[in-house]
Length: 256
Image 1: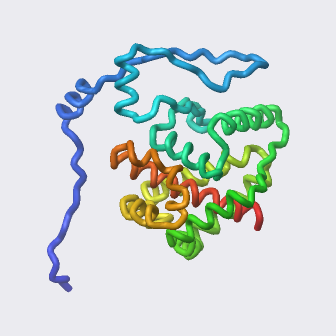
Image 2 (image 1 turned 45 degrees about the vertical axis):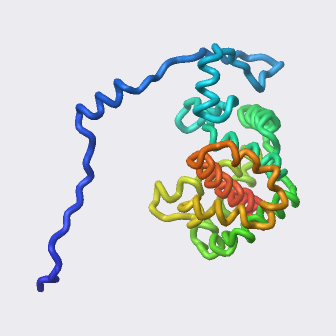
């Protein structure tokens, strides 16, 4: 029986060869430094790269930060950089006392890595009730807590995975929170299902955030919002929400 609706076909248009070549040739990509990793008992946790003034001003103007964090991905076996949204987001989380500062995080991760590579146990638990309370309060005031708890399938899977990672004692607690947060952040793009609608609409989330009592009481911790463009601000908000959910999920998994 005919449905009465016309046949509808969809197709995804790829860029032409000319478009691709033109875009590639118009993109500037240059090496700016070489890093040599050396074994030494006196470890280095930060590096300073001196560049000419014009290049520095270009980086600061276009990235809004002059500090970047290098990370190593054990799955892809590659080095990568955290962008300005993550650098700004981590600084805000640190100032809110939700996590330690990036310098202490790096030291803790490096120590945990040494233990892991030596087949020794890593302390994966962190009993910080204050961090859990702050994360819970933020999620409640944003009406996110009830939303994520209703998504029992994804929520319970994350809780279970956190408990499993803690039990294995192979990584530090911040690396577990980071893993949970990045998973939450990328769930929509990779599965089509969102962990929270507030991640899908950071504009709505931002306006809701600045109306919360928590934001008003801690406005001095968010001053950077006044000096960065809208697109960076919204990217930071999305990162913050994913990480705060990650903190909440970690402590629920640890305590359950």
